[in-house]
Image 1 (tube, one colour):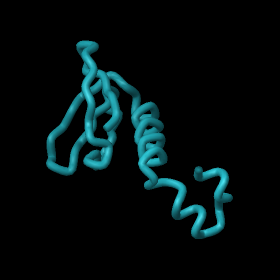
Image 2 (cartoon, rainbow, N blue to C red):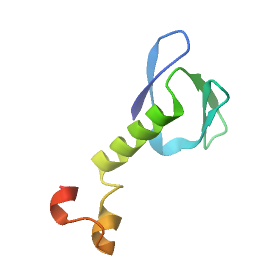
Image 3 (cartoon, rainbow, N blue to C red):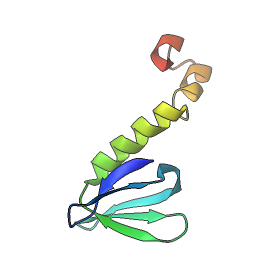
Length: 77
């Protein structure tokens, strides 16, 4: 889960694996795989960074790179 901020300033958590699309219109709109949309204050690049950090934390990023030889084992752990 990653934290995001509504336009009114309140924070909530969203399942990062369910995010299908991030749009800047100029507000950031998250579209989930269910079709539900959320307009949030965070920028698209901030959300991308949070998702990447979350994937790394749970092990979805790093293993493929090690298998392909792009990363050393020390960089993953």
